[in-house]
Amino acid sequence: MVYAISDNDGFVKIGVAQCAENRLKQLQTGNARQLSVIKEIYTKDSMSDFMCEDYLHRKFINANVCIDGKPTEWFYQDKIKDFLIGATEDLYWSLRDAGMPSPPIRQVKNYFGGNKAHLIAKSKGIDYRAAKVLEYAGFMTLEAAIEYMKIFRIRGIGEVYEKQIQAAYDEIKGGD
Image (tube, rainbow, N blue to C red):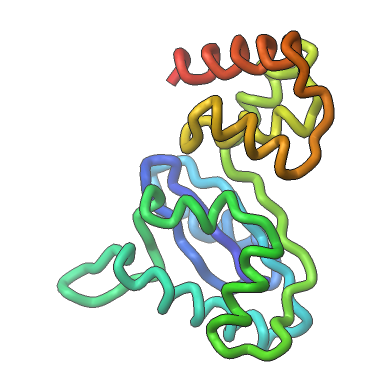
């Protein structure tokens, strides 16, 4: 599987591991910042894992953190945010456009944004899918979050619901 691990301070590592949580523990040992898994990409086999990782490293070469002029597996989070919040379909079509006739993506799990939005949304009685959108509040305007919800057919976008989303969004943005 391919993982994205954040240092929660603007940097993300993209790599390959059998288990993202085990890799997280290994990386955490040598890192003073609190790390967290923010994306897992499951492919059909280890060869596909490495192909996917290589593609992502090449795609984000301009977002790469270089040390002594040499690229690393770390990237500037703000420059790859579309990938971090993107859906399985986005990655599938990106790989397809890159020349893989049948991209081997089985599943993509996003954890980007942490639990803060879920807790605030729950306290305000907001649907869990709306909470998922609010998790990305750091990278979306409220209007974009509501539009995102409409695109993915998340129900309950009435005037009252929009006010709840606005209140939760304001609380999340105000707490950062």
